[in-house]
Length: 235
Figure (cartoon, rainbow, N blue to C red):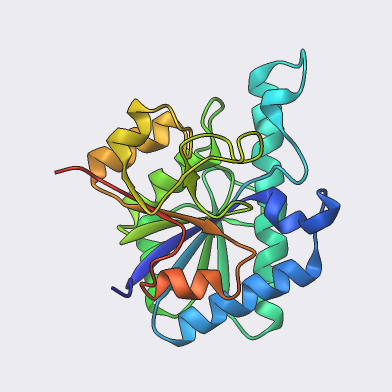
């Protein structure tokens, strides 16, 4: 089933490519072209980007957690502005919304404005997470996705789905084609964080986890192709 409105969650690390830090322009251009294809085909697209290519607040040592998370929020804003500009360079209209004021660099989050932007063919970037510490960009994506009523969350990662154990350390790890969000939590698989998962369950919001590096993966998933792992909601 082709989705009408989606939120694409991109990991910052995936955007960094092989260099693992900063921006890999070739990777980001590839993402931008896929997003353009979706919008040109009538799909309404929102984007949330993590900040891990610049900052990992939860591994920042003895730093105050609130301050570390604030730096992480700003890292997501930098990523959103950069990727939005790449999208604009290939002819896409974009907007970047944040939960806090940043002068003229972004707009303050508004559901009504976001929906109007979708209808106008814009890609809407939600940056800055929830605006509060202790919440991951997974939770920010689930929150914004629920608010603007997307059909699904598409989590593009540097792994091709959800496994029963870490495939990096267990060569026998088994990938799920489908797993319920409730079962994922029971198994403590950590494909998405528990706060985001709880919100997805409450709002009956499915998630597809897939490999960003696979050819045209964002387009294929948004158009309903079964790839990666679908995390569905029981009941």
